[in-house]
Structures are given as structure tokens and as C-alpha cells.
Length: 540
Image (cartoon, rainbow, N blue to C red; front, top):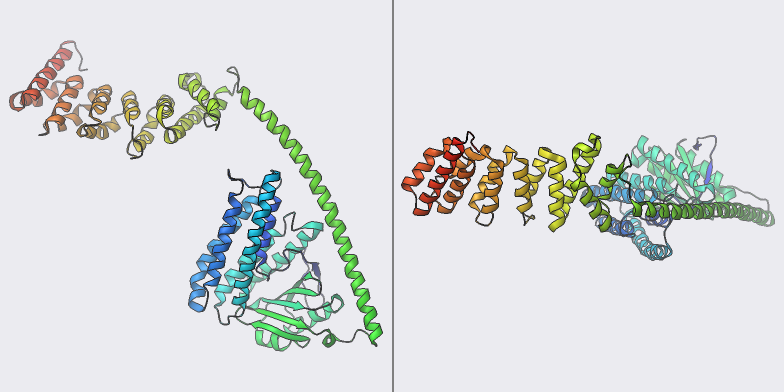
């Protein structure tokens, strides 16, 4: 658990080399480079997420570069929030597969190439941030969004294997989480980011005590970024100017009250004498250097062991992955046996395979199967959904098979889906849909199909469909039969001849009396057909 620095004590966490501090905003790109190199990419295009990260970071840089004053800072807030959300999504997607996928040699080469691009983005972000730090009076809500976004991303990056070598990632993460807690608890302008430069380790506690006293006992967390440089978060600080004025152990090289930023060049001589002579001072410095080197050796040894363990785990995962892939390929090649209890369920999965031969075989098998032979309702639904997916995405003969399969397995439940496809202008060949509607005989499609009798190109298909539907289509056709359009009138009369009842006779007689010669002849034929069906004791 993190120990925060209260008046009586302070606790230090070793710095993470890449995520050196939550206030170093250019750490964004480096953290994301770590994500990329730790894992692969779940996109079908292996570098897709990585390139998306680069685009997103460049957009974030452009947004920061657009900030000049209060108005432009407030206008940038939604864009910054959206950028952090997108970065978090992409980085999380890549970290999620760290333990599941080993990149190939070619992918690693591409990762390192993209790593160079990410470093360029880091430089751009660094320049944009350094410019912002010198802009005074930007609104506090701007800094709140920017600082919280960076802190949360840094906390997430602290857990990655590349960034957390030697156990330091978890410690760095504790510092980042403490900063997040500060920002969530106090107004952002009261959480001060301080960079201490040229601060030897043996003088660091004295510097922290001075800062805490100047801030009247505020909570303090800190991290050593690199040799003689520390990042400090201090809060809550009610009076920024009093804090800045209370820095009596060095030169304040940058202060920005609205951003809550201080950068201090430390003069260690002002932190109190550590020796009675120059020789004693040099001896203390040598001891500090020896301690620093010993700490670095320990860290390096911990890093080396962690890397060895990671490499062994990687080799094991790769071996297990190859074996699993071999088994999966063999099983995929064989496919399920007809006697398997899950035969139909697995065939439904194979219908959506990227392998054309596997997909085509599954479609043929399930197109010929009888739904009543499949006992599981869930499996029948799964098969219908697979046919629906294929019907929407395939083309040509494959689409025709898929539509027939959808009708077979979905029944009238497929009507809304087929109507949606029917109304989609991208479906240029609707003949299979007409055949499907005729087979389903669902009355809900009659108005839509009847309207197609006005379309010269699809009139014949619409007629056949309505005839298959049967007498249920009679009322809708009776509305169209008196049309002044001879072609539409003829089509309607032909359909009535096939499906009409005695209810159609008055309109057909009027057509015989008032129609064109062709209409009269077609109407007479329709009347004879209706009377014949009536004499046989049926209406169809």
C-alpha cells in the first residue's frame, strides 16, 4: 500500500525509466510504445491499432498546439477527452493480448519502425506541452482534463512488462494512483506538480521537508526520474504564490499558477551543511554515488531476471500456441462427424468460416437438413442467424443459397429481415427475395410486393410471388386492377385470375366492358378461371 508523505515522514519509489513522472506529459507516447512492443495487435491487419495510436497522438498534438488563450483552451477540452478515451481504448486493446499472442519477427521489425514514429510524436507532444506550461491564466478545467488524462494513462502503462522491469512498475503505479486520488479529491489547481533538478539523493529528504513545510503539511508523493532529478506531487496547496515564495533552496525556473507547475533548479548548499570540510563533502558524494550505482546494479539484476522469466514464458506460450494451432487446423480440416451431438451446432459455426471450401460445405449440408431433425432451439436459432449473416453479406449464388436457408430455418420470423434486404437499394437482384416471400406466404409482405407490379423490370417476379401467396393477396390486387395504366391493369387481372374469388368478378366484368381489347380478353380469361375453381369447390 502507498505510504504518502505526511509531515512526519516521506517515502520514495524508484522511478520507472520510461514513465518517469506523471507530470512529464510526453511520457504518453513512450508508454504507448511500451504497449505496442509488449503485445501484438488484434486487428486483422497486424499494425492497425498501432497506426491508429499514432494518428490519435498526432491529433492530440494538433489540439494542444491550437491552445493559445482561455477560449481556445476551453474549446480544446472535448477534443482532449475524446483523444484520451481513444488512446485508452487502443492501448487497452493491445495490453489485453500481451499474454496471448507472440509477434513474429516481421511484426517486431514493423513494431520498431512504428516505434520511431511514436518517438517523433513524443517530441511533438513535448514541445506542445512545454509551450503550454509557459501560458499563464489558462482555465483550471483545461488543466484538470489534461493532467487527469495523463495520470490515468501513466498508471495504466506502469503495469506493462516493458515499463515495469525489476518490480518498479508496481511502485510507479502506486505513485500514479496516488496522484489520481489527489486530483479526484482536490481541485486541480491545488495539486501542484514540482520538478526538482540537480538534487542529490542524500539531500532529497531535506528538500521534501522544505516543500512540505512551505505547503503547510500537504500530502507529498515523489519519484526519482533519473540521476539527481525528482518529480513531486503536492496537495492540497491553497496558496501557490506562498509555496513558490517559500522555495529557499534553489531557483524557480518555471512557475505557472493556473497549471499548478513548479520547476526548481536546486542549490544543495542551501539545504544545510552535510560536511565540515571540502574533503568530507567529497567523501559523502562518493558514498552517494556508490549507493546509486549499487541500487542501479540491483535494479539491473532484477530487470535481467524478469526478462529471463518473461522470455521463458514467451517461449512456452509460443510452443503451446503452435501446438494448439496444429490441433485446431487438424480439427478444422476434418470437421464434425454427422453422429456428433454438436454436429449441427458446429456446422453453423463453419458456415461463417473464412475458408471458402469449409463454408460452402456447411451451407450445403444445412440447406438440405430438416429443422425438425435438430432438437435444440438454440442450435436452430444459431443456424438461422448464420444464414441471415450470409444473406446480408454474400452475393450471387451464395446469397441465393443463404436466403433459401434463412427461409427454411427462420420461417416467418425471417420476414422482417428479408423485407429490410428487399428495401436496400444495394440488392440489385431481388429475384431470390421474391421466391422467398412466395414460399413463406406471409400476408405482411403483400402491400410491398403488390406495389412492385408498377415496376416493369420486376413485374413478372412480383406476379409469381403474389400467385404463390394465394387468395390472401386478392384485396391488395383489387385496388390496383382499375388502374388507367394498361400494363399495371393487365398484371393485376392476371394475378386475380390465379388467386381471385367471386369477390373479384364485378371489377373483372367492368374491365370486360370498358377495357382495351387486350384487357378485355385477359379479364374474360380470369373470369373463366375463377368460375372453374368455384365449380371445383375451392377458391384457389
